[in-house]
Length: 82
Length: 82
Length: 154
Length: 154
Picture (cartoon, each protein chain N blue to C red):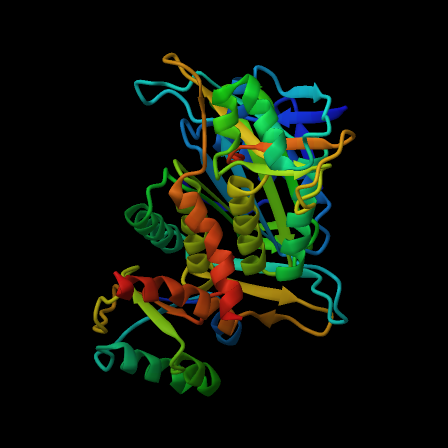
C-alpha cells in the first residue's frame, strides 16, 4: 500500500494529512496517481495539479516520478516557515 | 583655565587623561594649543598633529578651532569600539 | 543544532546557553521571529504550524551545511516551533557565532531567507473571519534570491 | 536605549527583557560582540575600554536616530562595556525589533558598523608581550562605507 501525505491547505482539502492507497496496475507515475486521486475529488485533483505544488517520493527530492505500491508520496503546497 | 582631554594612546603619551592648562594670550586656536603642548613634549606634540587625530571643543563637533581659557578640548585618536 | 519544538521556549535563555558554548567566537548574531498580534482589524488570534517530520529536519541540516561552506561560522542553532501558538510567542530562533561579525550577520540572514522560502513548514493564521494558510511574500522570494545572485558574481 | 556599563552583563537576560517589551514586533535581531581569547600565541589576556563620558552617549543617540530615519524599527537597545574585561565577556550588545526582519537585520548591521568605526570608544589589548591600542580594520571601514554607497543610490 502506498502512503500519501498532504500538507498545509492540501491536507484541509483532502480531509486529512494521510491516506493509505492501493496502487493498482494503472498507476506507474505521479501524473497517474494524481489522476486516480482526482477521480474521487475534482477540487483536490485540481489543487494537486497546481504548478506551485511540489512532490517528494520516499523523502527524497528529484527521485524521478515512478511510483510503486510501497512508496511514500508527499504533496507540498508553497511553504511558509519562519 | 582650559581643560585638555586625551583618549586612548594619546592619554598614555600624555601621562594622563586630563590636563588643566592656563591658555595665555599666545593661544587663540587649536594649532597654537598643540604648539604649546609640543613645547614641553615633542612626542606628544607629533602624535597630536597626526591626521587621524580628531578634536572636539566643548563636546561639539565642527565648532571651529577658536579656543578660549574656559574651553574643554578633547584629542581623539582613531576609535575602536564594538 | 536543529530543534523542532512543540512547546514555547525562552529565546533569552537559548541565547545564554548558546553563547556559553561559543568558545572563542567574537560575534554572535541572533534572529527571533515572533507571532504578530492584534494591531489590525482582522487580528491574528493564533498561528498553527506544521512540518514534514524527519524530512524538514534533514533539509534544515543541508541549509546549515551550506551556510558552513559559505561563511567561516561555528555550528548554528535553529529552533522552530510547530503546533499552536499565540501572539508574542517565538516562532523561530536562529543563532550564529563566528570569529568576525560579517560572517555571523550574513549566515543568520541567509538561514532566515531559507527558513522563509524553502524550509518545509506550513503556517496557518487563525483569524476571527476564518483561517488562512500563508505563503511567502514576494519580498521573501527576492530576499532569498540575493544569495543566488551572489553565486553568479563569484 | 543606550547603556554604558562598567560591569559585565548577561546578553540572554537582556534579550529576554527587550523582547518582552517588543510589543507587536515580528522580528528581533541581536548582535553580541565578545572578548576573543587565547587561540594565538600572543594571547589576549584582557581588554580595556574607555569612552568620552556624555559625548559618547550623545553621539550614539544620534546613530540611533539615524537608524530610525532609515528603517521602520522600534527603539533599539545598545549596551557597551567600558573598563577591564576578560576573554568570553560581552563587549557590546545591540537589539533591534521591527515589524519585518529585513529592517531589523539592516539596522542592527548599520549600528554595529557605526560602533566599530565612529562611536567614541578606545580599546586596548592587554597582552603578555605588552599592551596595544586597537584601531578599526580596513574591513571595518569598508563595511561602514556600504551605507554611504547606498545613500548615493537613492
